[in-house]
Amino acid sequence: MSPSRPSRPSRPFFFSSSAQENLRRILVEWEGTPYRHHCGVKQGGADCIQFVGRVMQEAGALEHYDFPEYPPDWHLHQTEERLLNGMLDLVRQGIAIAVDPDAPENGDVLLFGFGRKISRDSDERVAAHSAIYLDGQLWQAVSGIGVLRTQYRDGQWYPRRRFAFRFLSTSSIPSMPSTSPPGASL
Image (cartoon, rainbow, N blue to C red; front, side):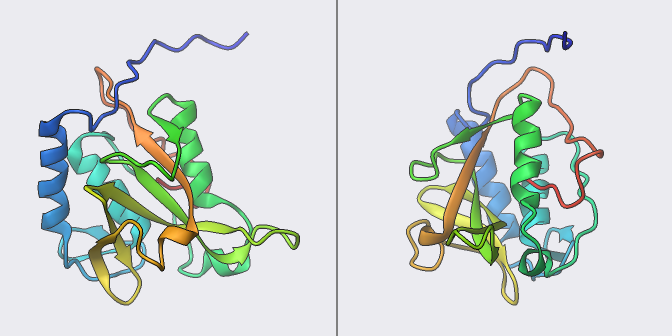
């Protein structure tokens, strides 16, 4: 018998207009941050994983964000779903829920397929890029460019969408465990 978990409200963390406005303010402050692998410093440098984690932490959706080391090209050589596994850890903890990537809401985190195919028999790519959806736009840190916003239905990103997740509001803000599998991400 597994231990029972306390019941968590299922209202989205970014449900209120004030939470969305706070997220908007935070994202604008990050805009223009240069791209730097495994870095998450506003206006200092960020990659897509660290950007999403730090923004969610700053917005209050996560109390603590600690992501293990990962090589910059992990998605080119492995079929391991590091980003997906990290988000599924948050789902198992009751911090987030999986939602339809075709119908994102403000504050949702989207994962996109890049790099190596997940199997020989599939055209699906490993979920190796993350972004935050807000007001019909994707906010993301792009290699060689930095933090920027693009349209959600942009021809480069929209066809690569694979998964979406929504953070939930809780009375006490949870921490992302530091015991996440190597490369687990938001």
